Image (cartoon, rainbow over all chains, first blue to last red; front, side):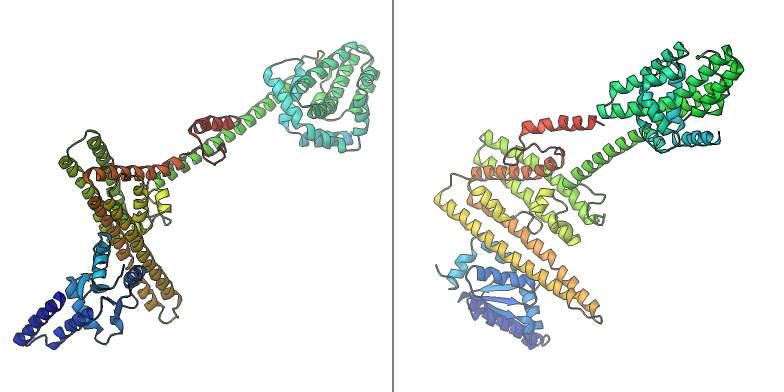
Length: 134
Length: 484
């Protein structure tokens, strides 16, 4: 729920930019909106490219833990390029995929996911989001 | 006459001057018994086994000589019955030339050499005896009988009866007088023999020293490679990249620093520092590891293959490398037994760390497998037209390798940090000492293996060499070489 408000505020700020500037247009907000909407749609969301091997690794990590994430292959999405740009912006300029959301909240790219698993914070997040039981 | 000259000339070709000269000299000089001569006689007599055998193949005279050879005493009595001095001298010569053989040869060789020498001798001595008889006879008897004896001598003369010898004539009355030509010939033969021996010895020595040098070079090369410091050309194509070379130097310095940190940690533990002081040292060790991961990140950008194929590592490490470095779950597994005592919470933390590292490793390994498969697919399924495109795709996939090495290093770094969090300061200090010693021993294995003695098969039932046995190896090896 906290995530929802965050995304809403982001959305409103984005639309404000659109409203004032007139430039950029709806294109810049829609992908981000789409991303965030997708991110909240299920407990674990992974944005991936079907041919990306690191994306494959993160998928294997979750399935190895008994988690079934929702995967969006952005290379199969007609708006994929824009989603990719939005994701890159979220991550701060590094590569766009894979990106992981848990409970609608941005976790990050592969290194963040790994680090959170090693330091023991990933499992509680998964449990909290309802992706893991026990 | 023609027949005899033919055989004698043929025989002169068969047997080298070297062989002939030595034996002839010994016979002529009659008891000049230097050790060299005996040795040479032995050598020549050994080497004349074959020539003598081939000589016996010729039907013209061997039959007669074999008969002669079988009845030694009888022959002598018939041939030189008239001059007792000849008999004595001939027997003395026979014993002289035979004794070196009998002393040094095996029974079979002895018999063969003796037989050969016997035949050989008779090829020599008969003519000589005849000559002496001729000389004696010519001195005392009428020319008629002398001539007949001379012809008889030449008729029965065999090997080595050179014209020079026959024409010795009246000038040389005593057996010990040698004319200039004979002397010169003997000296030449001696010289040729000596030169040949020297050449052979030099060649063998050269071979030996080259062999030893080659084995030493191979050992040095292997040792240097195992230490990962072979900057000149450690890889298959013989070239190391500049990024790789730079990392190797930095890594070597890091290993040195590691020894320093180890010493510091051990001293700190033994001297029972306060937790605050110990924490500083422990955190310093964490920073030390952060540094190598940073250096590896730089190296991965410039030469990922240098890292991932372990060219920086020792041979044993390289063999069991995972994604260009150590496997974090192996480290935890090694530590679990050595970190006692742990609280309940700590145990949960450590086992949780073991599980999460295993899961993360598995995920990365599967990702790398997929990279491998897609790379092979990219270069396999290329038609002639767009092969370039597929190569570009493949190159793009290779660029992902850096990402995997980076993730693996990230995993290693996070594991060490988490260890630090789960353990107390003192436990962490002990833990890092264990880790440092563990990898130190692992690194040492390769150089120990490279410098192990090669000839040894002295292992116990488990196939392990005890240190005591190891000490014995070098002397065993040296003994083997001393035979040469």
